[in-house]
Image (cartoon, rainbow, N blue to C red):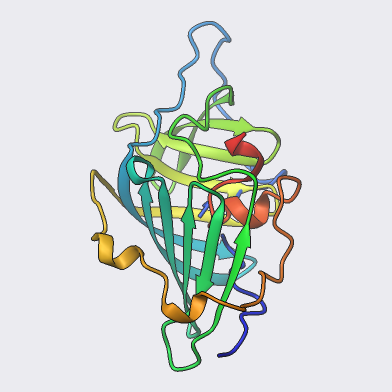
Length: 216
C-alpha cells in the first residue's frame, strides 16, 4: 500500500482571496441587510476549482443529516482522489486505483454546520458568473456569492485565491450509504495526512474538507 503524501490540495470545503474585487460592490445600508441561506441538510454540488491555473472538478456530497461530507476530486489530467469526512473529526484521503493510497486525519471539529455563515459581513451585490449575487465575507477567510433570486450558492473565494464555481446544486440529493465506506486498506497502520490539519489552518480543510475555524 502506498502512502498518500499530499492527499488533498483543495479540501470541500469547499476558496476566496483578499484582493478579488476588481469591480465595485453595490453596498446596501446596514439595516435590513440580507443574510445567507443556510445550507440544505443534504445536497450534491459539482464545483470547478481554480487556483492560479490549477484546475479540479469536485463532486461534493454534503450530508448533515448523517454527519458526513464527501469530496470526490478529479485533478485535471491527474488523479481521482476521495476525501471522506465524518462529524466526529475523522477524515480519510484515498484513491481507488491499483496503488491503494490512503491516509487519515483527525481534527477537533466535524463538518460545517448548515448555518456556518451566520454572522458573515454583508458586502453588497455583484454580478458573478452571469448571476446577480449577494456577497458576504466571513473571518477574512471566505467570500461567498449567493444568487439573489434562487438563494443558491454561485461562487466562493478563499483568502488564498482559490476559487470555486458552482456548476450544479441539487437540494436533497443523497449518495447511497455503500459509497461512504472507506476501503479496507485505510484501516490499520496507515500514515497521517501530510499537510497540517488544525483549527489554525482552516484553508486546507474548507477548501474541500469544509470545516476548520468556520465550524466553531
